[in-house]
Picture (cartoon, rainbow, N blue to C red):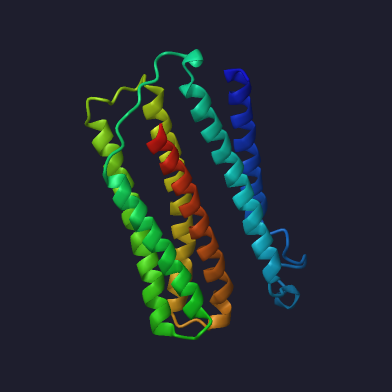
Length: 224
């Protein structure tokens, strides 16, 4: 596979991803009706939201799969002798633990949300979100460490891939934090459990997925 073929594949994946996100944001599974007539508005079917999330995760998986494929291919000396391995900042291990704790907290929030334990739910959601924010802060620290090291050189593709893959992962986590913030605000406003249970479940699934993606990326970076 030539580099031009890979670039075209990456561009196509980004276009498909953008179209899919726009499609899901439009919520096509909602029933059609007059927006001004509240009587036409009905509750969203739970499986439809889950299916929407699964499609979104499939799109993200395709994107990361292309990045990983490009990473492995670019390491091949046949594609250039300008690849120089970079040290992996030690903070990445701490960041990994932070994301693990964040995912565990979100799982706990999902569990207690069905038990109507409002206090425990608030604590679990806040813990999950704070650990995720600390993870992103840790990633920024790792980027700064590399930027200030003697290994930093823009012509080194290994460094470029490190910023690209960790950056894209952080962007998706920030998007999850936006949804988390909305759900958490509803919980702190004493929303009825049945109105937030599904949202918490979907957030938890998304958190577990991003943890899995990070473990794959981190393992790949460590091995190379």
